[in-house]
Length: 535
Image 1 (tube, rainbow, N blue to C red):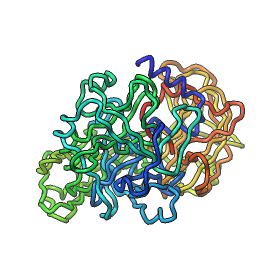
Image 2: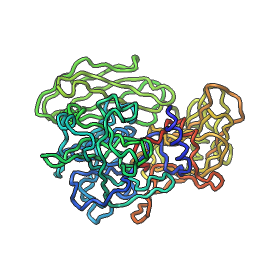
Image 3: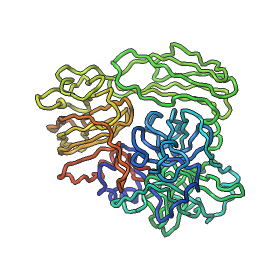
């Protein structure tokens, strides 16, 4: 790990934990820019968490490609499904009176198949809306334009992100802002970018002007003979507007074939979390819709793990404007698991089709534990190492080397789940983890007592409490107790000076000061690089 990555973590330590949401959630904003004129960027899109108002729920930018497609960064949506977010198109003020008329539901999320994380490249994703809409589409730069741009050419980047580069003084605005930054010679990009074609850098050697948290996924454009064309996607950077550290942008022209393939009209669920499943035999059906004007043939279908099998496949030939289905049988194992299906297609720009379903393998919790959960739900589940009722709270069991205990609550409505947790983990590699809809939401270790509030974005949510013992040792009198579980609907706020963090964990403990432990950030892989807001 580079030293400046570690130093950035230390700089970020004063941020409240309510600004941290799993490993996906560090973000940036426009630094030292100016307010965009209303209508200046009609293709601009705000990505908003489902069931949140637009101002408080906005977490990333994007651009409208036309029809039903949106272009954004993979790190903005790699942990999300369509049901988690909306797209707000063609506005500059997140609080304008007609904002609801510009808000549309997302149907599917397509993350680049070779995306590992933002700093490793391929930080690009396509969103498919529930229906076609009519707005001005962005023009995408081609390889010729990109390859012929001179170093120093001025580019314009815009967004609703953080406007103060100091990590302890976050400043968000409801208005869209923009800033001009010059294209940087590729060799001057960070080591993990300079040798690649899938990203480029822009900014000043002395810093001062940049995109920042909250601008992730938004466009950076260049003026050309065809007007403005989108050259890149806000991706990541070491801090914001720091001297010697340029902003990094996904190179749109590198992905032209991939983008065209995803916009052909082949609609499917790339990744889906189906919640708690009883151990043993289960089944799942993948549905594929062919919205193209041509018949599509598939071949070479494979399923993993190897003990999973395909029971029905009607997707060998898919007629235009028709759908098909692939049904699989699989054995759910304890804890989180997944099953993937891949197949070849005869679509030139989309030759590979990859589908994945993930689940939590677990059994119904004992009655005395279920009775402790008074919030409305559809089921309480516990792992074989079962949490137990200690009379006043739910307590984790005594665990040995490399063991874990999980407690799941399913069927939670959109809103907030609050609870008290008394955490005693004496070894640094023993963790209390909280998962929301299959994604790691928070990780705690040490000794602390806090009140937590978790945002639940979906109409039907699954929360998992997990105590996991270290694989390196088994000693230590560790335990987790959970009490005072309460559920409430979202309280929409439109007039606050900073945007509330709807999906992150809020901490009220005065003793902890709400500070992030930088070692915890390291454990989560939170390098504070990607430019997404936490919502």
